[in-house]
Length: 256
Image (cartoon, rainbow, N blue to C red; front, side, top):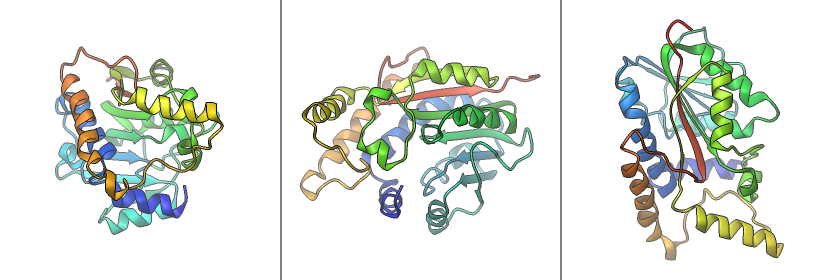
């Protein structure tokens, strides 16, 4: 990512439709599971510019919320946002003792790790979680959906939900909830990306950019689409069969 991309991320995380809507989806999937358990230590792996750190306080209350990222620029923006506990390190080598955290989150980070590094990161999540602790993992879906957005963000891999599940289970986790998300907009994005590829038109740059002034009215409508998905997923037996994101909520079993 370029410095400009981090600036866009920092400016947009609070109100841009995708971030606001995905927080709604995260809450619907995570609230019923995390609120069964006491939470005093939270780690957000690949915290970016810090938009989710304060939001995660809904689970941690007065506990400690730690943001971790490998990139100086990202942590600088976190400091601007008022984040207090920040660590510069890799997701594949977490500088924490075993069984230190109650909740670990990874929002669109694993796709940036090449080779088998994503599996090392999952094993590290498992190691630093306490028995009964929860991991929330989200990553972009489908290799065939790769575009200029992925190139701009240095994304190495996109996942199927089945692949994500299998890798987390190999790391030792029990899957509590698994679903695709951002499903209603999948046909629109699919048409745009695949048609551009067919036409040989370059789809360049990150999608995380402000909407043009004449299209600002779309922001609320697009957020409402994701809220609709969140409402549908409130019933724990439901899952979305396809979508732009793959999500797993996984537990480290007690006694494991």
